[in-house]
Length: 407
Image 1 (cartoon, rainbow, N blue to C red):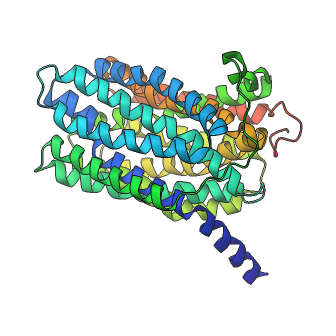
Image 2: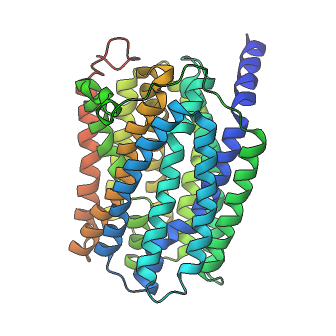
């Protein structure tokens, strides 16, 4: 039995390793530079946090279009062409960011290029997550998404630590150039080893209204709405937390980089075993547990001041991420037919990208409103996740056969 299980795991890894490598390099490149962009705008350029949040909110619309377009095109053209196009664009954009700091109209250039980076990442994600569903069975799916997240978070664990260290003696231009180099390596791996996973049956050309056809299911709408509350909390990790830790508490960028590194290391160490342990549990309860842990981790930050204590809070929130994300992706993959997985993942991605974009705006406004007392800041943020927890416990998926979501 054990030998059979090992053989099954090996087969799954052999199918997924090119995509895992692409995710690792993409995560590492992103985390080398972009987590520090909010800090650069706020501290080095004196941009108010509300404006920083507004710039990032602007990427919500861009990401929304990219998610839908990437999902639709991955169903029509295939997963591989969409991924290759997104990676090529990413290399060019980071080269542009490395030059943008020299222009007088630097805010406009940085904002424009940042939106482009968000577009390229959002455009690729429906294809990547749909490819995982193509290559795995229903029973393997939570584990498969767990493996994919391990690859991404190996990069996420390495990037912030290296980026935080390099930022102490290198300009931002060098960080963006380094990210462009890593992105080019990622593109090379995809060109050489990534194979198409979508079969011959492709999605038919449809009108704009049909793109959102899956949202006619009230249960799926409710699932997306509750997930959005959690994703808004998830969006605090990069922008809001960086300013809170460095500017409000007086810790260093290396400390903040260490917190992001802990996030990545915990995902690497625990994502796969927890995905296996929870794969036969009620998806509804798994999602509720993930939302609760998110809320508990961020709520505690209102009373913490030391680096060690903040690491503990990040650890609790990371457990929420580890529990929540594979279960959510597995539910979305289950609800879609093979020819529509890109579309469903694109619609899920709308919520995810909006959370990462609107989350910093909410956090930025709260930082400006509560400059001296962090408890209201983190209390308001955590309440969204607790509300989602209650919502998941009280709801089903609304679609017959959805895995374990109905009570």
